[in-house]
Image (cartoon, rainbow, N blue to C red; front, side, top):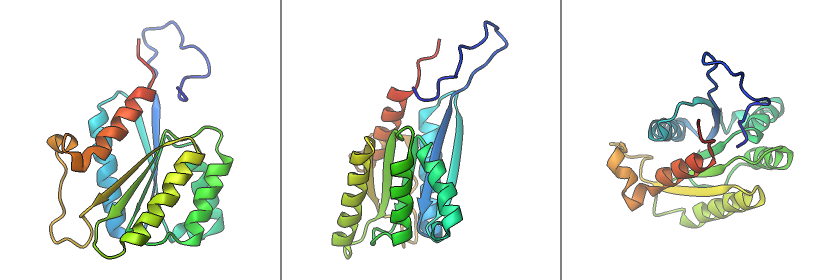
Length: 189
């Protein structure tokens, strides 16, 4: 696993090594950012691990600033999961530039690329094009790819996922991500 310590832990009962798990979130707007954060919180809760979780959140607009895009690319290159939350419309050029930057400069591949999309009847072709692009990014980066279309944007009442929702095929994405993460984590002992 990628988060193994550089040296063996000291032979001391006082030494407690906790692996870290890094998630980078890129989001389009306030609604997509809130949904991504809720998804992240559910993933952390579902994993139920003795692990330090770290997250960085980057709004698409901020990725248009070259220096900040570079910093965000460094974070994504070192992440375990990169989560992109958007309405499913064509990704802005500076967001694609960010994606290609961390993809080409990574030293270790993230475990997974996860995409959250708004579920609307119109724009299905654009959403599919974005999904296909991100699936190709995951393939090129040797990452698991999970795409989840949801009905959370523009709704007066936003759904809340519960534990039983992880069994529902409609919400299986989080369960699959959790399983992929668990398979890659080191066995304690």
